[in-house]
Length: 476
Image 1 (cartoon, rainbow, N blue to C red):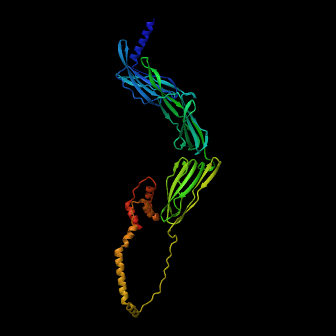
Image 2 (cartoon, helix red, strand yellow):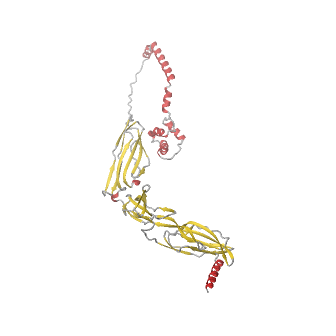
Image 3 (spheres, rainbow, N blue to C red):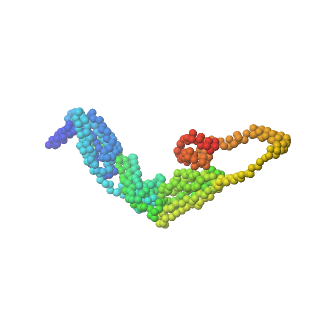
């Protein structure tokens, strides 16, 4: 009777090998979220090719392997191929059947269900991740801190690890997280500190962080022998929900700020640039502050893109004018959550003196009409005779001397050199053209020059138009 059982088992195995050309299976039908599952396809046909499978249960395949076994059944040898695909399911799913063509016949694997259950928080696990925030309600743009604690037990071993940071959609993240490390006696703890601010009002979520750890595990091969394998397991943090509220009292910015403005000089020559630097320091939504660009009559203004680093906002502005002008004060209105009031800060106005400034009023030229006098022919002859010979000689010698001086010194060459400049010097060309900016053609050229000088763009100036403009205003 004992032998009968073995015979029946052998016949069952033989029937499986004969009739089941392709068989699919999984190592675990039920797993906790974060654990891996290995999907195996076994074929007794030696001519079958490894199927290309990139995703299973909606997740990417993270590892593949294959092996070939030779089995002796009923005195004969059978070659078996096994293809393994490791994946990490995030929810309960069913692996769809896979079809194969073998000897002009189509064979199909059976569908396999994999159940995924939620992980229970285990404070004594080898690896623990916590997301912590002291604030769960904030104003839009208000900075707050989120800490992520990654804990590892002293005796926990890992062959490899992969960390997936939490998704913080709907938040501004200020710079890179600050990192520190310490030991509490049980765990080695790595702390990452993020500074966030909400982009809009509403309920905003921070997804769980994930730490995938590879460990060695013992498994049985097809012969029943133990073998070492690498098994991945993921550990997840908690999620965070933050309620973001609109900024009260109609303010656009929130925080606590200070502002200052400085210039590189207060006295310049006509059309010489003044460089203004605006600095805002504080803890708040600096990212929302727009570029400052004052409007000053008869002054050209060139603003650079603001630069934000940590808690500092910096912007530079260049001003060019041909007469005295005043740089107006720059101001910022914001809601201060510490005082719970709306505050306004501003800089002092700065007076700029332009030496040799052009007069603003138009010159009025008065012309008087002289009373015509009639000369008698006899008076005309008298005047002509009164012109003495020595006066004629003096005029001739003076003219000769002036002519020789002009030929020797050539003042027109000096004037030409003073007027001429290299048109490739875009900053100098811009200053030369600024007084004529009301001209549409000049405006077209200065727009290109401003883009080239104060941004990263490099545009080509219309040389024909530039030549016409320079000739029109005698610019060489």
